[in-house]
Length: 352
Image (tube, rainbow, N blue to C red; front, top):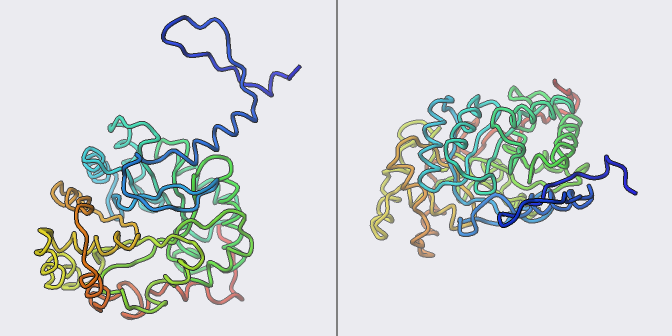
């Protein structure tokens, strides 16, 4: 006879007759059901996606979604509500954006079931084990969810660059423990380069699903310091995802080049598309997911309307050969600045 705490009683649900007996489900069966849900939930089957290594097997990563960086909670709620109403099923947010409650309100207003959308969040780098798990739980609380589809470590150290190998390993191991409890379908990183990844790989028992890095037209021939070691990521089975895919943080006039610049608009005319759509298509046609940000309904619609045309090999090559706009935000046009973060191992420090 099983003890009471080894079973959970579920009422049998039958619309044709009243329930007369409880169904007793062993905890082992519940765990298998949870694993099955974590692998199969998250996106409608027809949503454009690419495979990604999750905590319990391969899952689908959306090829497009809504970014929310620099939006406050109210604007985030508005943008996410419009996007979900149009058919977006991926929202990207982060603890430091301070807008996750806006995402949560939009999800509730949408009326969508949990298995019909995909949520990415991020926790800061440089956290110790207890702070990692507490901050990740705060993300769930703010979103109003019991799990996210993808949780990233936002930076390979604190945002002011303090940390090192030991700190990265401690945070990753804690994030794995958190994910294994059923709170994330996949875990990964952002702004990480090969040396940061190798630190994590020494202790990892779960796959590093994603590295989210700056990538856009103008960086196709850029070196590893600019792309955060794109080729290395792909060689390790780590999905490479682009942020700032339209070079929004770039200084003027570069910040408009992928919207109305001559190269993208010329190619767009051949397909009846805008320059923005061409710039985004160059990425998704390579299997690189994008998360462009907008709270303009016309732009939101265009940013998802990427899958009824194909760029020709010649057009893809022209876009790949472009050298402008270059990498933004780093010390120079050839360096994002990420690969030098926390490079002094003598200065290893774990931060709460």
